Length: 379
Image (cartoon, rainbow, N blue to C red):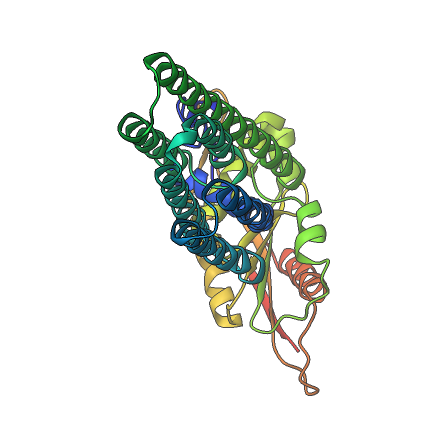
């Protein structure tokens, strides 16, 4: 996937405008988002329940108090269930946002019931909602649009309730409106800034990771990626095929045409190899100066040989333009193919064993006259 650019960040929301980039970012942050959602919901729910004491103080023990207590318990049940899911289940991004929005909507709905049954306290209600809006924008993980819609809707509903039920002067209504507008503006700007900063950090991180794992000339994976990501686990592989490729007579190309043209031949081979492998399935590694390694999961020896033969014939038939554009450079490549099978004890070869075997086979192809494929099944 290409790097998301800074221009790809939406100016209004601070999120990636590209759905693919945003999905990749959210998947990357998944392990942070879920615990944060669970903790915030539990924390806010405890305070929400604790404020039932204010209902009792304002209304006394009676029908209205019991109605509000039931509403607060509904909030606790909804948010608690969503928090439990966030802690105990691996949720998709859409499910996480649904849990956040549902919890917020129920809590804000309960708050409107509190305002309705306690109409003499709209000053306190406005202050309380302002705090809740900051929580909605900043502390409960959700999309910017979802958070903004919930915040704007709750603000409008409270203002309507205040005008209809509250016995407030015009100055009080204007002051309350300005306070809530300020809370929305501050929350939205802060959420936008947080969104942008976190995505800029993500972009820088994947850029550094790409630089560490990729060869700068060809864009293929490098040997560091091979050793750190593919060989580190020591997993035995059945049904895996590796193809080691080496461009023939490459020193002569450099000596005859120059290193710039030699680099272009390498890039040309890498592009061809990348076009013939499966994106997201196969791995292509620049193994040495003019050597490339293709790791092909779920590929038999016969399929690996057919792949190497197609690559061999296409590369031999393709010409790389020289730097001055006057000539074309034709060359060939040699290939070693090793596929993993099951041993008698039920085990399979390690990846490094397959690479070692393919390396020997590739040199055998060199000794056999170059521009050919040598293969074996490794048990």
